Length: 215
Image 1 (cartoon, rainbow, N blue to C red):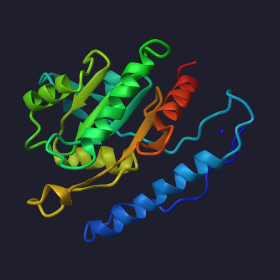
Image 2: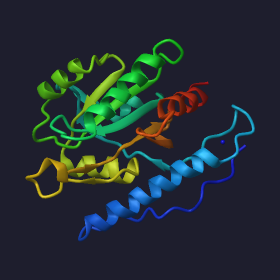
Image 3: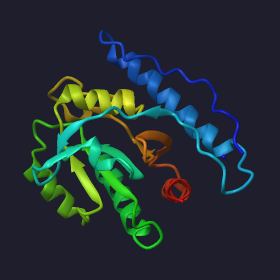
Image 4: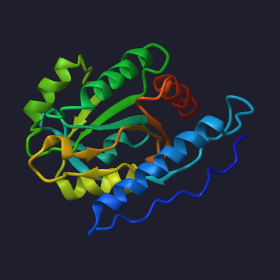
């Protein structure tokens, strides 16, 4: 991307009284980032990726119930996605794409880490997350399933990862809103790219840009 600065995007602080408006604005902003990334000039492969946001410190647990905090990722390049194990729509496909990232990065980018954040921590206990990861053939040495309380998750996902997050009416699982974009994070916990997982070539783009950060 010798890259022009990304366009100014509508990323307001999340309004507490009307989450639907926040989600709509954030989805619009993320779509703008994807379009800008696809059309921004890339003179060569050595260009600097933009800094989009910073991920705040967090203290969660992983699929084994062990502590998993942001310090464990300091100095690492990693990719995040956002799922829940009861998800009736996009999560199986999103997780499968994360699995493709795991498999395709093993040879050329073995240092790349993967983190799936559950947005349903009440149901997704470590045991549930471990079974879900095993179902998707996750290598837990490289791919972590993270669980935290909702306020902390909201801060990390909404403010840090620039992703929508809303639990809907609490009854219909189809009303749960969560991000459908990969977030690429550098060694200083800065988000350097977002990639809609349904876009053709999304995995290729993540791997290409991760390679820049790992050099």
